[in-house]
Image (cartoon, rainbow, N blue to C red):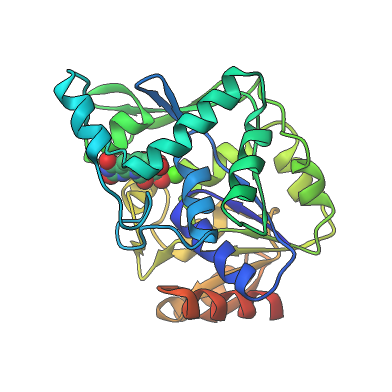
Length: 302
Ligand code: FO1
Ligand code: CA
């Protein structure tokens, strides 16, 4: 099984599939990555890794559970700008990642080292070892992704998105095989524009998904006209799409065979089917491990 993932939605679904015993590869967005304090930070890789390792701060959706902030406080006293909240344990990840990258390792290799060290069974792959950066066009100008998301709390209207570097980015080793060679490929309930598009946009990934013989299943991140988390609803609106599971399904025509929508959206099932997809209606809001495994088993049976 292969999951195409952004942060929390992909992490939780991957966790459910792992609990259900799937032989799992997670292909992860890296266009949210940011360099701060001289350290390379890969929020979506870390959210997936911490969640699969059982270390995630589930309430907050990012970082390590039970964190402390001694290092960040000390950096603040030394005059560093500390708007991006990096916990002590999380900082250790960024130190090890950055050291590995500086020593010449690829992001793929560094990620494998981190996941192995934390006891993660699944294969976690950055979609590319090259640099891609989501830039957000807003009425306040063009913002870096974390400046938009964390710095300004995703309050600005999103007028457009640029994935800087994506045309030159090559898929990381194993990524295309993970899509073409899987029995099932799952497009996670992640933000279609902020998380899924910068994965599909890397050379060969969209074509691999369009052409794979795998059963392709997408889970809607929109439930009852609202995003489960984050600014997906607002972004769909300003970019001219319907804020519904149907609006999401339209983005995936030709790329998925099955659309999984929530019980609240059962009335949209026929319209989604009319796009040429099978539809599964179920409780898609995962919550804790039990809910994740239940949704995973529903996908495996679909
Ligand atoms: N999100 C926040 O809203 N505030 C933060 O201070 C913050 C810190 C942070 C540190 C490490 C990390 O891996 C993620 C962090 N996030 C934070 C979440 C993250 O930046 C975004 O949720 C994702 O990039 C969007 O999916
Ligand atoms: Ca993300």
